[in-house]
Every structure is written in structure tokens, then in C-alpha cells.
Length: 193
Figure 1 (tube, rainbow, N blue to C red):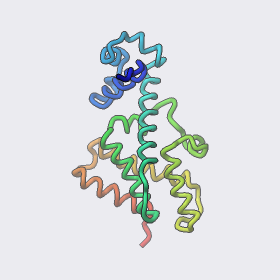
Figure 2: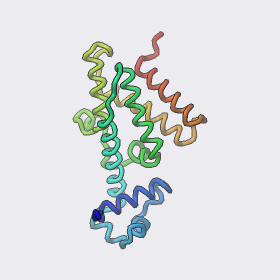
Figure 3: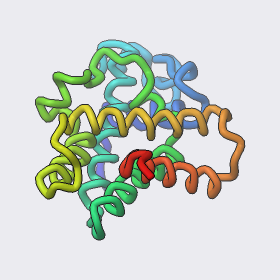
Figure 4: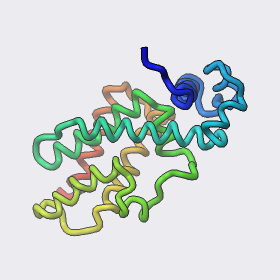
């Protein structure tokens, strides 16, 4: 039987509370009760609530990066771009509150554009940037700042996801997925006729 370290138990309980009740439900007392420890014991592993939420968000980015790296994206540049974007959508729909914490919530340790991205500190954006750079090198895209393009594409895709998760888009999941893919392709190809 594998012994799970207390820090992992604390993070798992936090993630469960986040997923089932939202970030406002995450308190040191509630997490401690879920793990079966005292609230003060959490402070041995995480200095405060924000550090705990940051750790959960960081773990989410690690998971998303692992999924992206495991996938073998084949096809032309546009197809691979859409397939990569689909991974973000799938992750968001499976983990809506975690996705919101990762990409929307104000966090002290969140990566900042442009410095953290251009320095390669965003593993998820770095994978998309490699695809954009490939498109520039092949002549498919005009030469531009690949990091700005990735950030803009991320803003579009994450914005659509957040609007959907927030109930602002009145569509079935299949209908939203179709809109999301059309939007991704429109961004990729531009609006030219």
C-alpha cells in the first residue's frame, strides 16, 4: 500500500472542495477536516490559503501539460492547431473550477505575459508557440511575434470557455464545441475571403 504524503492529501482535499463547491469553499478548516488533521497542521506544508490554491493550480498546469505532451498531433498545421485547442476545451469541461483558477483567478504566482511566456515558463503556451513558430518557418504564417499570437489565441479560446462555463452561451455541449472549433479555425485562417 502506497503511503500518501500529507501535503498531497491536503492538495487533493483542496481540489475536491474546489471542484464540488468552488473556491469560496476552500478554507484551512474545511480542508483540515477533510484530511483529518488540525487546521494548524496545514501550515507545515502551505504557508496560507493562497499558497494552497496556487499549488492546486500549478498541479492543474502540470496535468494539462502532460496531456498535451502525450498527444501526437497529426495533420496539417490548422488541424493540429484545432486538436491542440480541443485539449484545452476537454480539460476545461472536465475541470471547470480548476480551469478557472488556473487561467482566470488572480494569483500571485501566475505567469505573466510577456516576460514569463517569452522566457519559456509557460509549459502549455510553449507547446502552442512551437506550432506557431513552425508555421512561420514554413511560410504558412507571416513572421510576427509568436508569443503574442499564442497569447491572443489563448485569450480567445479561454474567453469562449469562460463564457460557456459562466452560462453566457446558450448551447448544448456539442453545439458549443462546434462553435469553439469554428472560432479556432477562424482565428487560425483569419477573416479573409
